[in-house]
Image (cartoon, rainbow, N blue to C red; front, side, top):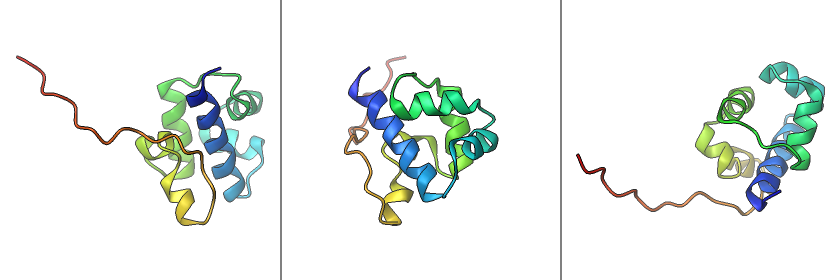
Length: 95
C-alpha cells in the first residue's frame, strides 16, 4: 500500500492508543468492524471517506485533522506520522 495509507493507519493507531481504547472499543465508537479497524491500522485496507468521517467523529477531531496526522494528538505529546496536507490554496474554479 502507499505511504499515505500506511501513515493514516499509524495515525489511527496512535489516536486509539491515546484514548486507551482497544480496537474493539474504537470499532464500537465508530460503527465499524473490529477487524476492519485492524486492517486500517496495518495499512492493508484503504478507508473510504465515510470511514474517515466515522473515525474522526469517534476521536472528536475534524476529517482534515485526522488526515493531516491528528494534530490534536500531537498536542497530547503523541508522535504522529510526518505526512501533512498541503497548505497551498487551490486555484479558483472557472465558471
